[in-house]
Length: 495
Image (tube, rainbow, N blue to C red; front, side, top):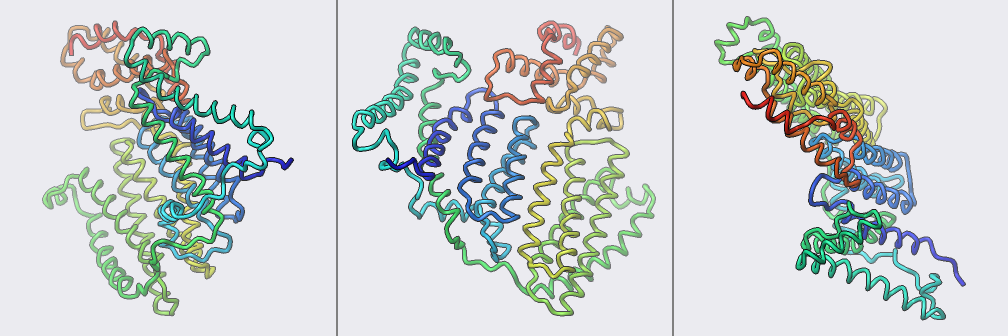
């Protein structure tokens, strides 16, 4: 009897992951941090196992993917979660698309995730059950084979029928819920809306179809679906932009010495000026990077303007840093300002990587892949730093009237600040019980804060493990004893 083949084992792992993924990820209440993390962790493991040719870049992309997946279990801030998911999908796709000694151009690297999916659809999967090597499917074991097929068919039928019957009969729904609770599975909500289960079933079918194909394609000779070459002679745009930037630097230096009154006469407030300068300079810096990375020619005149434009881009980025830091020193931290610093750091790092690569005469694609790894490290650093915590504890956002408590109340549970904010509201209410003006001015964001506290209490008092997030749970433990009904009556009655 032949042992179970490696490809059969991988297919069964893919099958198991694809059947459980919709249940873990598609929920009707809260966002599935843990459910999504477990699913992506499973697929990341599959990806690493099936990849044959692993060079330094494919391994680096796998590591970044794995660490970003771990971050899903820890962080709960909305925009960061979106960045993490996007990064996981992109870096996982890159790791599967990365070929040993690849000389693909930059455009091919950029579109590799899309190319991976579209190309995979047209090939035949090599990952499937091997009936000759699986004992329970062997011809001599017809009884076991029949039992296996019947069991799969029965489970599939029940997955569709039970939710339908439960939605049609509340008594049957309660009976089914009681039975499920006996097995400790109440949080999986088998009696959810029938359409939710149908959607889960469809997603499982799609995953079972596409994942084995992607796994097969990742180890084949990969040809881009898009015949685009990513290099061209950039001498003219480099020359033009270089001279324009020289003129800009001269006028910018003049602008640094103008008085606030002169700035006002030009139609700018300090706030508007700082914000616009940062956004505009960062955009120009990104355009300069694109010009540099897509340069094809290696002639002396091209190299001269490459280095000139590189140093101009770095200087432009330093101006963007100055604008952001000046604004932060005056008005504290916000998401926008912190992500601005991150963007400037990302662009600055790419300039440095490019200059180093040019000095070492490295291949442009190699330089670009290094920049992608740097981008992944920046994203991991954002997760580690925790912007929410910094905003509340290291430099509270403020306005002309003082600390912006309305903004602070909008911070995610990652800030671990809800207990302290609630305490401040309670102290103000006790100290100025009759002064409506003070209460209104100092209790901005009270509605938002109490709603966030109430949502956390509802979520973790009837916890569904799929939606668990570590920092969110730690925040809940600090505010779980707050009587939200009493708080609304006492804190919001005068507002």
